[in-house]
Length: 175
Image (cartoon, rainbow, N blue to C red; front, side):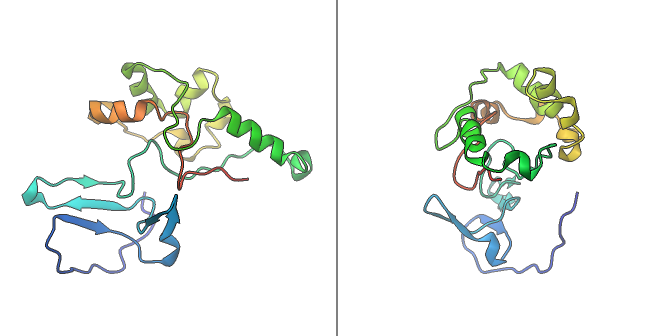
């Protein structure tokens, strides 16, 4: 899926080995948790191939499914008017969030790989969602062709405790 097109490629005199592919638009530069973020969600960082380089599709992070999602419900404004503080409190009481938070889901690696392959379908089968959530989620809640066997053991360990959490910084929940 292509969201934008390259407008300009500019080579700069740089003596180190990290290259940054980013967006110069001011809205893609912000401060999160007192840290200046000068890259966009979906940015890419690449290191010099002559130095054993790699390409990281998450130039600003590698957290589990750092992305933006909309949730469609059958609620109307009159259904939630006056109840938003209680709804938000319920969400934040049930979704671990903040620096160092961990998931209440304790999955073995073989089950985590099923999550990576099946996405929202995995969650629905285990009671974490409704069948209609598939229709209301981008790409029906999974990436076609996702291959969990390509995910390193280190990445699985790092992501295992993040599944089902909100995180912090530029991770947010809004109404």
